[in-house]
Image (tube, rainbow, N blue to C red; front, side, top):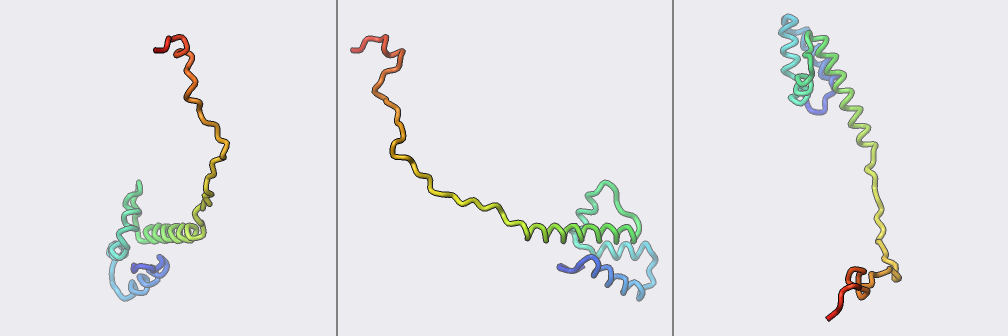
Length: 112
């Protein structure tokens, strides 16, 4: 399966070549799997159960391809949330702490 090729295109090419071979079903399944990209194989082999039979492999590959393409389209249509940050302005009459007033505890002490 070449980059950019859909699962349906890969399967159509595969089916076209199947007629030219005299391979048995098990050999066809092996050839089909060997033609898949590693990323897809990794997704399949990370499942809890592994597909058996060429038809099951085709179904899984078709589903993965459709999910991936659907996600890619969705991802392109979503624009990241953009914040327009306005410059914060500090009001001129912001209250400041009066540091010259002693704390209550300091009022009971005598000053030198």
